[in-house]
Image (tube, each protein chain N blue to C red):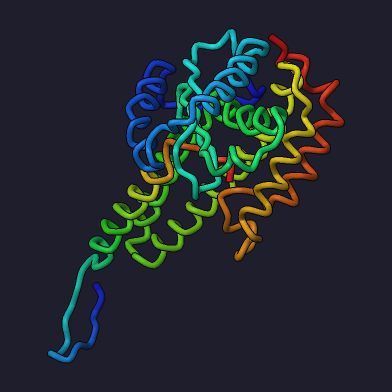
Length: 232
Length: 42
């Protein structure tokens, strides 16, 4: 899907089951489903366009786009298998359909690229390596150092996933007829919402919003040569 | 073999890091579970 080799321990059916199993907990954590039917219809329609006008249509994932009632948390989420969520707090700060499409396209790429399954596989590997280092050295501090390095590697993978979701999200937006500039505007919203990062980027799960804006603008420029395979 | 001084005299310990490694493993597992399976935009 992304052109990269992946080493996954979950089958598509297992991913879908994991997402469906995790969804009620996520819904509960963010205040339940939004009672705002207009908001839900808007998100349904944009999600439907993204899936049905792009390569996502041909995949096994069961996409469902839901608005969460949380009015404080500015965020959106994807669970493996196709469950995608956006909070009312984030939705209320988006002013165009292109911006909403930017958020949903980003999350849709996390599903299509199987980032969760990939992270589960890589954290299994990291945990195994940390255990092996601990056993081999017989030294707790060595194992602890290995664990910290393992976590930093995990964060690096996480940031790479986010960059991929941004840049390939641009392809989904174009395929489904939305202006990818909406993704840049989303980052500006998120930049304002986060109020600036308090720690260096290498300790963050996500790239710095300013860096994301530059990468998305580059992705928009290179889209004609990069995004052909994402058309529906 | 690790020998350390304590208020109660000297004590010796073999493979004393195993308990810490176990706790560390549990912490890493919890962090892994907490950070999965959702991806967020922020």
